[in-house]
Length: 231
Length: 231
Image (cartoon, rainbow over all chains, first blue to last red; front, top):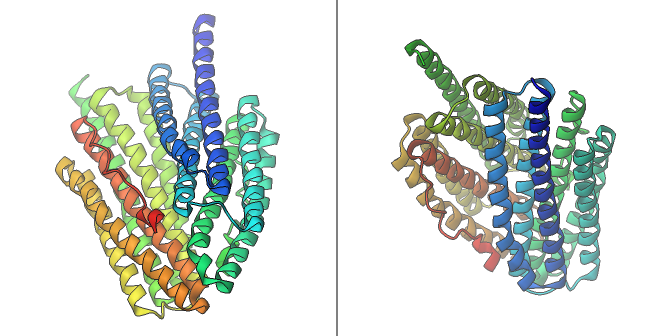
C-alpha cells in the first residue's frame, strides 16, 4: 500500500473519529439538558431535547453508512478492522444515550413541575454528574486512544449503580409515605433507571475503546446486577 | 461474477439468515419464559432465562463478525448491501430483546412470588401475547422477505402500546389504594415497560425488513409517544 493511500485512509479514520466525537457532544448535551429540564420543570427545554434527538439519529445513520463504505473500499484487517468495528459500536451506544436522554425529557414534560422534593433532586443531579463524567471521560479515552482511562471508566460504573440503588429505595419510601406523590415518583424512577443505563452505555464504550486500543477484552464488568432487584 | 460465485454468496446469505432465525428463536423463547416465570413466580425458570442470554450474546457476536467478513470479501453493493445491513440491525434488535427478557427475569426473582393480583397477571399476559405475536410475525416476514407483513407489524405496535398505557394506569391505582403493594407494582411497571420495548424492537425489525425488500423506507411510525407520559 502506498504512503499516499495510507494517508488518505488515516484521514478517513480521523473524519470518522471527528463525527463520533460530534455524536458524543450531542449526546452529552442532550443528557445534561434533559436532567436540567427535569429538575427545574422547564418543559420548553425538554421539548428542545426531544426535537434535537433527530440530529443525533441522522448523524448515526451517516456514520453507519460511511463505516460500511470504508469496509467495502478498504477491506481492512487486524487493527484497522478493530478501529472500524469499535467506531460502529460506539456510535450505536451514543445513539442509545440520546434516546435515553429523550426519554428523560418526555418524563420531564409528564411531571410538568419541578421536583419539589429537593432531596430527590439532589440525588438525581448527583447521579447525573457522575454518569455525565463517565461519558466525558470515555469519549476522551476514545479520542486519546487511552486504554487505561477506559478501564477506569468501567471500574467507576459501580458508583453510578450504587446511587441508583439508594435513589430507588428513597423513592419507594416516599411513595409509601404519601400516595399523592406516587405518579411523580414513578416517573422519577424511570428517569433514574434511564440515567443508570446511560452509565452502562459509557461502560460499553469503555470496553470497546479498550479492545480497539489493545486488541484484548476487558474482563466482564463485576457481576453486574441491578441491586434494586433485591429490594 | 461467475454463476458459481453467486451461488456461494447466496449460500452465505442463507447461512446468515439461518443464524438470525436462530437468534429470533432464542429471543422469543427467553421472552415467553421470562413472563411465564414472572406470572407463576418460578424463580428457577427465571434463572435459566438469565443464564441462557449468554448464548444469544455469543450468537450475536458471531453474526456481527461474519457480516463484516462478508462485506470485506464480497464488497456488496445495492440490494446485497441492504441485505447485510438489515441483517446487522435485526441481529442487534434481537440481542436487545434478549436483554429485555433477562430484565423481566431478574424482576421475577425480585418479586419472588406469583402475581397475586390475577387481573394484573392477565394484563401482563395479554400484552406479552401481542408482543410475542409481533416478534414471530416479523421474523416470518424476514425469512419470507414479505414487505407487506412487515408493514402490518409496524401498524399493530399501537395495540401493544395501548395495553401498556392501561396497565400503567391500573398499576398506579393499585399503588395508591394499598401502599403494601408498591414495591411489587414498581417491579411490574418496569416489566411492562420492558415488554412494551420488545414491541418497539419488533417494529424496528419490521422497518428493516421493509427496507431490505423494497429499498424504500416505511413512513415513520405514527407520532409515537409513551402515553403514560400524559398520566
